[in-house]
Amino acid sequence: MSDQKTLSPRAWAELLLLGLIWGASFLAIRIALDEVPVVTAVLHRTFWAALLLWLVVWTSRIALPRDPRIWGAFLVMGLLNNVIPFGLMAWGQLHIETGLTSILNASTAIFGVLVAAAVFADERLTPRRLLGVSIGFAGVVVTIGPEHLTRFDPRSTAQLAVLAGTLSYALAGAWARARLNGLPPQLAAAGMLTGSSLILLPAALLIDGPVTLSLQPVTWAAIGYYALVATAGAYLLYYRVLAMAGAGNLMLVTLVIPPVAIGLGAWIRSEALPANAFGGLALLALGLMVLNRRPRRHD
View 1 (cartoon, rainbow, N blue to C red):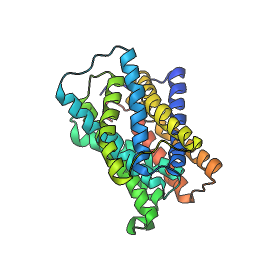
View 2 (spheres, helix red, strand yellow):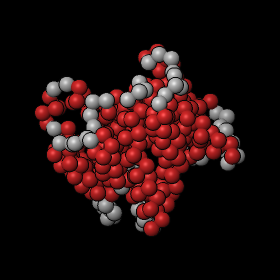
View 3 (cartoon, helix red, strand yellow):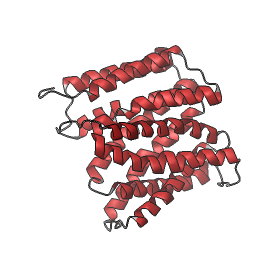
View 4 (spheres, rainbow, N blue to C red):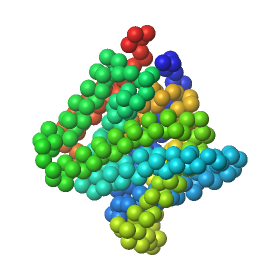
């Protein structure tokens, strides 16, 4: 395993910026859902983001792949990294607070470690990683509340849907490493979002009916933010931070997102989270810090 990189002041600044952008996206999505159905809201996210990223690919003069298998990989990646998690989390936000959604979203890194250990020989589950995963899962249980794990009302089902979305993110990470490694990140993101849109367009027409562009200005502002800034722009920033900070340090962004989402949800929508959600967040943060700790030779 390669040594973990040291975060420079610039890397810290861009990592915090990425956390702020993604943290605010939960509120933007919830605002759009006041007027737009779930599948259509997700289609807006992937379609407009794809258009912007293809413009970036074109202006950067990046050659398009000719291998049909790569385009097929984009389709699968779009399903795993956009269609399933975006859809499940958006539906979940209809029943739970935006801040709570962001806390559960932090478990993406926990699932990512488990999926990577199951798929890749060089990502073995060391004692340190096992400890971090265990603490993280304890945080998930505390966040949801043990009583909600044994019943299926809309609130508990929504929380489990968000968790299923984080698992899909983890599977997408493994798929990207196996099938999309070596592609320019702008091209990979544009292709993935295009694959997502191709899946979502017929789904939106079937489930939600015709897509209307006659929306309130606040709805368009929310869509513009979560599609162009928090999806297209954030993907480009994500890869910049990844190059500067490394994958381990980039995991810290998941600790920045929940406070932003919780604060905005309380300020704009008067949301109040139960005490167990904050206890769960603390455990998730501890688990992520254990996972991110610089390993010793045999750690």
